[in-house]
Length: 181
Ligand code: TYD
Figure 1 (cartoon, rainbow, N blue to C red):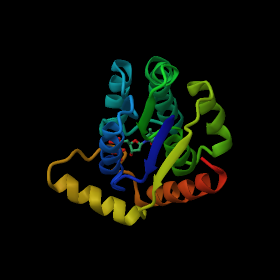
Figure 2: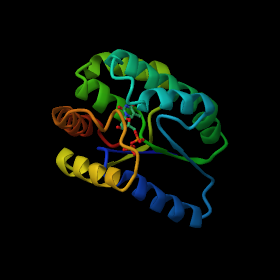
Figure 3: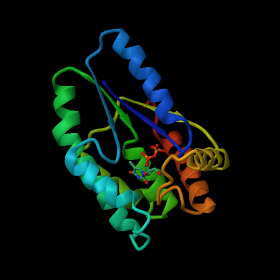
């Protein structure tokens, strides 16, 4: 089984993921936990480029392709092998993040982004996606508080409020279209 977690920045996703992990581990599941972007050596290097506040000139298309490059590496070298060996995979962010952030947030459009996601993943879609619904205002407030306490505040956190509002509306739309997943 392949489970992804999605939500706005500051939604508490990482906290909930770690709770689910301990619960599933206590039941003896063969669990693989991974995060996006990152999760492989190549992916972590791509993550550094994506999070770097100096890269303000990065275009939305370049950003999408970098996220997808990291994801392609993760899917073929980590996620698929683990699923094929019968394990459970939990991913902190996956394809819906690209749809919400690049497709809706940056306005590339779901129609343009979907085929790129399909190419990067070879069509691998989660069996279940847990979406933590928090308003962009509350999410940003929490992230700013965390930044005051010394947590990293990245290039993507620094995007304008309107950007986060479009991402939020995007997640709502993705949820409506996702059907049973
Ligand atoms: P991260 O530090 O993992 O944030 P969080 O703890 O909220 O998951 O940073 C990931 C950032 O990258 C987050 O702002 C969402 C964004 N993102 C995209 O824009 N597109 C994507 O495809 C993915 C995976 C993440």
